[in-house]
Image 1: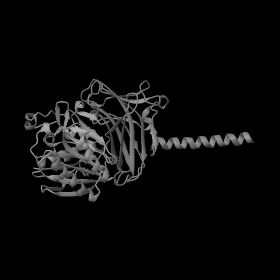
Image 2 (image 1 turned 180 degrees about the horizontal axis):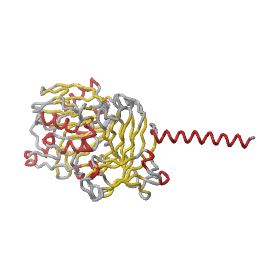
Image 3 (image 1 turned 90 degrees about the vertical axis):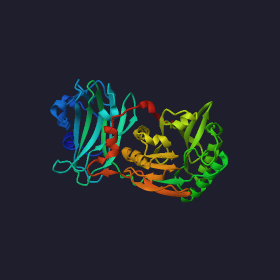
Image 4 (image 1 turned 30 degrees about the vertical axis):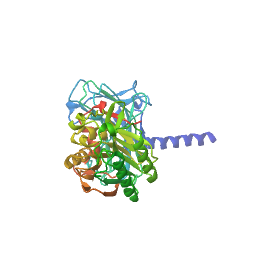
Length: 451
């Protein structure tokens, strides 16, 4: 009797397992992990995976690799197959989505002989309605972090459009005839909406006059920090060369080692008001002088520095040396980058910062072109905060819209922005993601993570 009961229970459990598996075959629900692609030798398409490309002649070579994988006995492989026009790979449909629910995609990939992985390795989600047609615009995963053993972790969190009921995940390799990419440990899960990520940016428009000395100019900016601190900003941007403006001292007289006396007093203000401060100084390293912007953290410590890469001829003739990299800095509210004045004339400084995940660019600037400042913001889809003398002190959003600007000296304002706000165009989609996937550019010598 007991044996019969056990047999019946096992049979019932088997039916439940089979039913659950059949549901998984039809629609992978949130919280699913796709990691074993061997399917016991069965056709992979039976589990929902299909190969795809814009046109049949462009289809790369797609296979299941049981030699190169991350954590399961197999991985999805895509190879260029000696075809310079090849573009496409593997696709999977996630069904039964909840409209406007936020979803998180995570996937690990590894490449060989792929020249520009940021552009040629693509993971995107193409949203579909009940009729199978596209709704909204596709979202591109662009956040990439090192993982282990040469693998990289790619992820994104995005809301489903209100008409969406399916999501077609497309994993692709493009225009890499000798390249191969492997995909493994792919997950798709519901996540809660993060809510606003508010940061208060302090704007200082100040041009001291006839200060008589380096210290006189510095004191004017220290008073400005007290003024703007009344509105409790998280970060304040001061101008370029704050120890020079308003006096006639030379680079040699102004340049100092960093950290040094100026970063010390700036640090005292930053600690007093519990805010980050960005300010332009002149740095001395032996007999080498740089036009440098420093980042002081809330505790008053020197958290990082950026040496101006693009020097105008006047600074070269004055004996300054250019920097060589564009570092980014992690703060407690997000990732920031810094440019200085003449850098804004060129596309690659802001591009390098955005490429590394900067969400806000701080721009101490003597004089320049407001239109170019707007261009740097809109083409990289990030916020830009400037502090200028002969050009506007301004806050510009990722659409290039000027939220505030002034050239009046002695203006102190604080603005709250939401770094989680999504800027999606009805036709183009979220260009922040597309920017990283479509940009034909890669110059790693200019990129330096701040340790």
